Image (cartoon, rainbow, N blue to C red; front, side, top):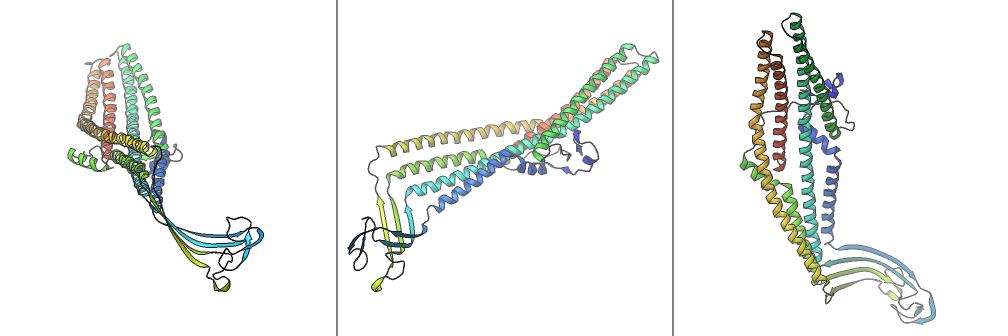
Length: 429
């Protein structure tokens, strides 16, 4: 189990190990940009619902009581007999009551185009959310394995400092026995001091890696935690599997395709201005001088009215034509963006696959190099003890081993990061 440099102590030892999946789940609840993308996707989904419901009839229940000052005369307006004439000729009676349910609907191409645009916008927002999620996964994966590598490098630096201290003690003993020169002691002491500085740098790097990952995982980034050990044997999917998954699941392509559909809907909406809209109205209720179902002399106040309105566009000084051209220009740009996304996906998939293949092929070599460097150091120290090697050879072997161990950790991070990028690119992670 890997432990963070800053979390040494009883509290950290008792902390449960966090897997990569746990880290991703925690980051999804804490990262603000991902939260903003998720909110935008949910809002776009509601916009789509509202665009669909806009195609359906609306129902309103209208109630009104109207009083108009009489002008002192009577007229024969209204339903029956004589009545006081209102001073405002636009009003029907001195007392007028309306209580009506009205059903309204507008049928036209513009509403259908708005619905299609909302559908495309919702699809694009969902794809952008997936882009943000996969970007977050890539970031968390890099920080996760970077934290493990930093911890392992710290352990290697501690071993190298101890090794340098032991060798410095050995040169002192050989000088006391008149088997080595004082220059050997000085060289060993310089090497020990260098290893002390490298240890401090490694401790600082581990602390930074711990905090950077902690920012995404916890409310307090200083929280003690441990990470599950990295798996070195995770295989890569085949190229055919990756290509098929990428063509189906890549969110950048889905986003570009949704943007093109949205532009097509804009073209349709602009062209809809050439066509008429049909407005339908059905009203049922009362509109009478009495707030009652029946008026004087048995007159029925309760009734209905219906209307159909068709407005034909005739001339708008070419504004509609210009709007159509604008929408077509934007649609052409969206088509270019889609083809560019397709080309970029092909290139990224090829590059990342080669990167992962190369990194995986080098893992075994890096492990072997570390083992060889450790054995070389052991043999060189034995030769130095026997008087057959110089202090420079021992120092060089120590440096080689430390470099080999650090290169092995860097190689593992390189492979795991490239593999995660492939999996997120194809939607399988």
